[in-house]
Length: 224
Image 1: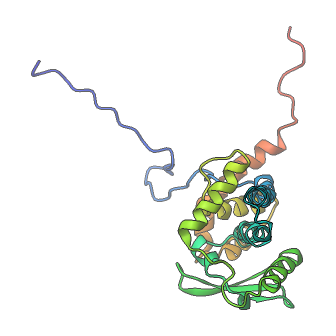
Image 2: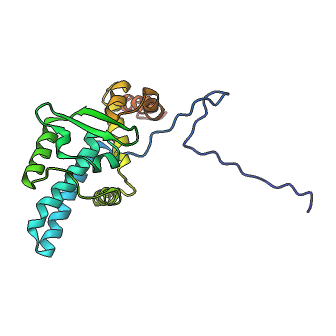
Image 3: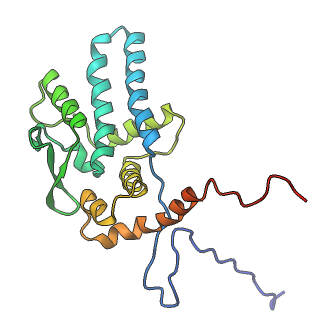
């Protein structure tokens, strides 16, 4: 029929929430992210992966390098909260083991960024560079291989679809849920301003409320 009305279905993406009538501000929901537990499991899983692979091929001598390389890469993604391109370009000289700091170039912001590093990570990096005589770049691969390493590590613990940026989100969420102020998280991630941090992570308060209320009983154990 010529006058038949067509039904048009309009779908609004769930990734945006309109604020008020003016639609001036958009707040994203909690992004896909690596949890603290998943991060630790992946570090161990990737080591075991290389051990088994080396044994099958009869090349146990190759196990230490690849196992420590991939494990350290995952560790630095989490500890620094850095973007994949920046982590791939890290050099041994970027670390100050005495001051326990790391200064690296943020390509997206076109600036140097200095953060503190925990003692354990400092020791891991120092041993890695010393044992394999690495004086320049820590990792002999680029973005494509980095994505493969993360995807493999995730699949080894039963989590699919992970990519390097999920570590950046994961660290921010972990710090926020640990009570760290947004301005500190913003500085850690190297954001240009705190507004960027708030856009992604300020609505974590809902999850905080959920955590606080998880043991509250809303109904009696018996029904009447």
